[in-house]
Length: 330
Length: 189
Image 1 (cartoon, each protein chain N blue to C red):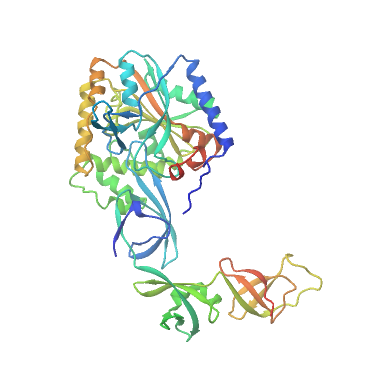
Image 2: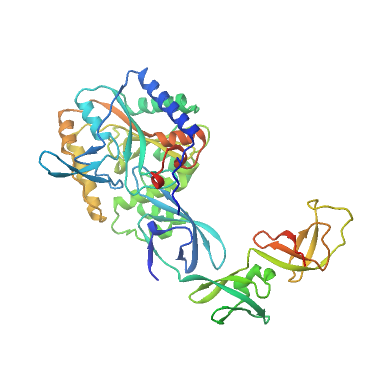
């Protein structure tokens, strides 16, 4: 197929994009949140089971030594190191790069807005995401649900207490028998449970999170805590939330885990799972852990896809229409 | 047949699903930011002609289907089978009623059709996009009518019924779009 040199977004869309970035910067400027930049290239990366970082080689001209550098899947670790160094509230608009992701809502390099609010709990940050969406793309008031409420409302099952059998049965009911075929009931693997929950959520719930209001889904199961603190009130859940608008996943945030020891355990557990499912283990970011040892202030942080935000603002369903050049003709 | 992984899925790839050969129409990548990636695939089942969506875990593999398209000229029907011939090798293939299906009303002798073979047997017969057929019966139209005003039904030599403009008469040959079953134009004799 002939590759076209022309931008995949129209020039008008790029004007809208510039305006959106201006509005975002204004939003944080009036709130005294400091804009920062952190490196795209770093000596380590995330251990997330379902994120693949790309890497490249750097040659040092002084000694000709070559070292592997990872392209950041998000600026999270570097920004948290800034927080540990006393930056106070910060935000960043930057490129993030993820391998093995391409589709109507995914481009391997994409623009992320990530911000951290010192002293905020999860609810305060959800409220601020709500405000940001109203001011940038004119949404109406956000609807809030917990992960559990979403499953109960849309599927009639409780994701926190159901057995693996029930979950397999539910997946079969929705035509996913080919996917659950490989699930071994005897083993009762947490990874299988999470895979099935993600399957049901992305296929049976997410498409129904439509309407004029964005929806926040909070209190993810603790097995999907990622970098969030566990919830002291609902012990099977984590203080993690996501925001959906018109069926599109837009943001993912946490009341941030501060404990370096637990953080390290979660990374090691990620690597154990990666190994078990045949994926390469990732080096653990010791500089990030060193910073956590010194102390991350109590804070909440969230990452929001700027390309998707613009898609939603303009009513586009293909990410290529909002970026100057997609990976196909970059 | 080899197996195909979801990252090889693209429009036109033939795979086996529920024991039936299927054609992939679309492949959509679905991935939660922090979760397992899936491929939501739109497929057409080639025997039942049903279109449906199926989701696969990214990286999973499915068996390929031994399906190929071949261009053959339509010869004749003996009432039970419809016979086609490869104009280069003169090899003949007979398709049954199930394979011919709705296409039966667009089969014109010597027209080149696409015959879809599964494990060597015909399962789908696709007529050319346009065929020329004679009108065997239609009501005489009103004088002075020009194209595009409602039209009338006309029965063609194969038994197909299409809507034609009022000025088109019995005995004339018309060009029909087989994909929509709509009248396209009159054919000058």
